[in-house]
Length: 141
Image (tube, rainbow, N blue to C red; front, side):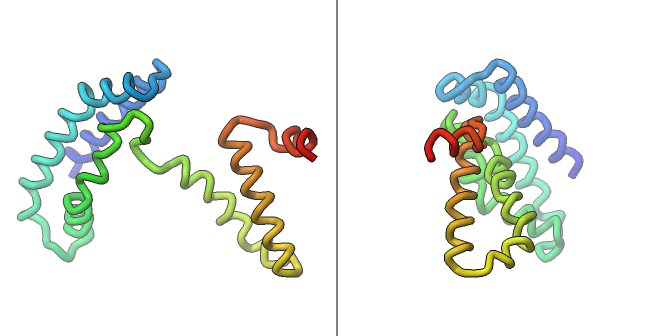
């Protein structure tokens, strides 16, 4: 399995280079085509080779089956420079929800919860666009 981790590290190395060059859209797609596609080809071939060596119900076997079953979706990012290699941005956006969940049980009413959800949506959008939320609220309100 260390070979798999090495290949995944190579995929992220391609992304790191592209990020340093600030590549977007078509330029990023081309870099992925040249740098990531060959690694993905080797990874897919390796996964197919080791498939018979793993017990299907083991954790590794289930992870391998999931990866092969979703291979098209997992490699779709190479065909579109606007897609990310992973969903880390979405995970980071949701982290605030998970951290605040205990505090939000004390809003006092359904309307308070709805208001908080709307405000959180505005704040997350501001953060995503690198806008200081307080300044945006002050300007809009």
